Every structure is written in structure tokens, then in C-alpha cells.
Length: 219
Image 1 (cartoon, helix red, strand yellow):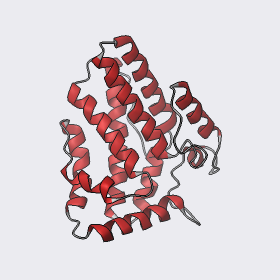
Image 2: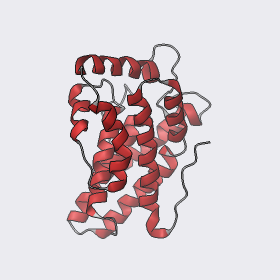
Image 3: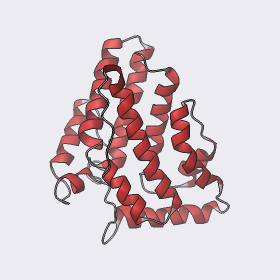
């Protein structure tokens, strides 16, 4: 495989970070260590820098985390109107939840031997679960490479590429725009930008070997 080891590790870490930041509740244990997180990949480091700057300015972590959870609830959980629902079905199924997209995501997870921990509580097309699946695939790719199993690695990269294309890219760019437009909170603005940069970069990474890059469009 042509992907440099540092890029591979950066992708694994970034997907885990994004998964955690879209999972309620947020805590200092999740958010605080990001101030010191650095990426060997220049592209990932550049994408992450703005979010790190927001965190570096925090002086009262207790108040900051409370504020994050209040805003997270308002944006993504409710009750009441949600400015940025974090579910694929909302964007692809006429603003109705638990649609075909939820079932398709669940089938893909199960096919790869993954069952969402929040099954029965959180729809399988929640952004945190879809990002967790991408992180899982990145872990499995790394394991296959360590074992020298190029065929398994290619198969997993194909699964990851198709999941990105079919399950994340059709809706997450619009979701990110909604988040940025709906919140005054710098953390969530930068998180939405980082998420989009991650997906754009991964699309290029996964498709680049075959010249299949088609940049994400958001408008």
C-alpha cells in the first residue's frame, strides 16, 4: 500500500477524536488532552490547528465543559427543534429519522462484525456511530498491514471508501454547514470545519491511487 505510515496513523487518531467529540456527554477527559495532540501528517495537523487554538484559550475548564454540553444538547439532541440533526436519515429521507439510511448503516456494520454499542438507544446513522465505524476500519487496515496481508487491506480500504462515499459524504457536508450556521460557539464551528476537512482528505486518500478523486461539494 502506498499510504505512508504517518498518514495512516493520523487517520486512525482523527476518526477516534471526531467520534468522541460527537458523542454525548463531552468531558474534560475527552476534550482536554486535545490541546497537546499533534499529528505527524501535515494535512491533518493543519486541519486540527484551529480547534486546538480554541481549546488553548480555555481558562475555566469546568465552565467550558458545561457550556459545551449545553450547546451540544441544543444543536443535536433537543428537546424541541434541532438546528443540526446528526442523523443521515434526516438529510436523505425527507427529514424523517430511522429511514433506509439507518438500516443500510446497520447492515454494513454487521457485515463487518460490528454492532453499535448504543444499539436501541441511538440510531445507527448517527454521525458518531458512522465515524466510529470508519475508525474501526482504519484500525483493521493497520492490523492487516502489520501482518503483511495486502489482500485484506485492499478489501478493507474498499469497504471504507464505499462507506465514506455512500454513507457519510451524501449528508455530512450539509450537516457541517448547518452546525456552523447555527452556533456562536467557536468549538462547534471549528469541529464542523475539521469534520469536513477530514472527510475531504480521506476521500482523496482512499481514491487517490486510482485517480478517482471527486472533491466534496457543499453548495
